Length: 402
Ligand SMILES: Nc1nc2c(ncn2[C@@H]2O[C@H](COP(=O)(O)OP(=O)(O)OP(=O)(O)O)[C@@H](O)[C@H]2O)c(=O)[nH]1
Ligand SMILES: [Mg+2]
Image (cartoon, rainbow, N blue to C red; front, side, top):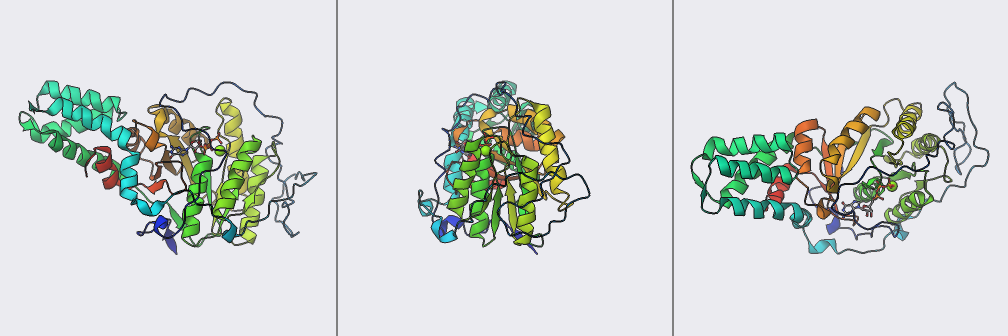
């Protein structure tokens, strides 16, 4: 049976919210993320590609089906953190009942929409839709990160029916919102969890700071609210802080976290997590990964290895590979899609930090160019600030239409 990961009735009406982990950093600045500064790459901790740890950490000994390959046994298995009881999980930081998700979305997109609506009002107050106005509009759309191709397409659509006529800013906004909705509708696809898979494996990939770990926490909350059992795997073994950040999300959402010491083999950890999730018949396994791009070859090797190793447990896993993109990076997001699409089989996108960005238009350009499903958007750091991506409400919110 297939189930949607969100329901019509917003989860926040039923469940108290959590807070973002203490570890979380300040929201990113408006400027595009620069290429990460070179740092020493922890090549050393990565064992040979085909070595697979067989000792599940801290779980009852049970024969593990290991592929017929050389096997590296972890010398000193780390005790696995105990699953946290659901009841103990919920410090409440938000009051989600106060706001409906539409107003939250609108508020989240306000930086992007105010830029667009102010620009449109400036161009179209008592003005005919002539070539000059179209050019100004096209430029505005480009500066709002909709990209040259999308901007040209949208202005052409407007010109087709309105050229030479006097148009009001509201009319322009409505027409543009319709164009945006048409462009993004095909990619607005909810993330579907296959209840027949135990677990449905979701791998989170993306550049550092784009919101992988936070998105895992938000998704875990939503799946838990739907009554699913969820396990988290701290596949970013590069930094100790990354592991503890995920553990905090695990506590707050009542999900067990499979983690190992810093520098442990991420693929081995993912393998163990999947074995355990299978044994425990967990519905969803969310695997976090490191996002450093300073050594693209190293990252690619690690991600490919994670995928290769978990396929030994389930040839169809990961069933979903989500790329998180930080909306504040604007056009840089295009490069990130290209890079990660080449590394792993990205099945869908999650655009984060739309709330902190005037560059929400980039989503439209990405939809037009890559046609990858956009499953959800992040409009804040809170646990409920991940919204399913809906074409109509997004396009209206982006154009500041009630
Ligand atoms: N405003 C806002 N902040 C967000 C959103 N999503 C994530 N963040 C914040 O962005 C920062 C980075 O998020 P992480 O989840 O740690 O990003 P990451 O991709 O796991 O980063 P690495 O582990 O370094 O690769 C944190 O401070 C988050 O709270 C969002 O939708 N809106
Ligand atoms: Mg992280």
